[in-house]
Image (cartoon, rainbow, N blue to C red; front, top):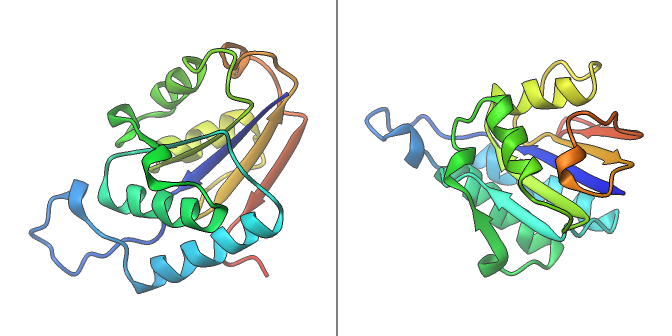
Length: 162
């Protein structure tokens, strides 16, 4: 069994228009939302074996805040440059490259690629709002099989859910 959490970064700030896209931070709402989502994951006992993040400031801050809520050390977050503004097929390639281990992976990245990948796994997912988390459980022994296998369990949560 493999469990994949696709996390869209929290709401980012546009207050400094000259700031490069890669360097945009989270805004106040984004910081509140990621705290809320971190608490929800912690209450459910979610603890991924691997936490992957895009290097963009808004994604990495989202990953750091989720890690803090889940008791994961900052040094254990794996930053992968391939996740920045990646299309769905590139995200899937990163996932399929994980091999047999770990059992559960949390991946923090960007739209539109993240929503496209979530939709590929579960057609009922049309959009991942900021800070949304889509959880997929696959009856697979290796990450290489992800993409062909249908998930047996799908959960979508976002800050706006009560």
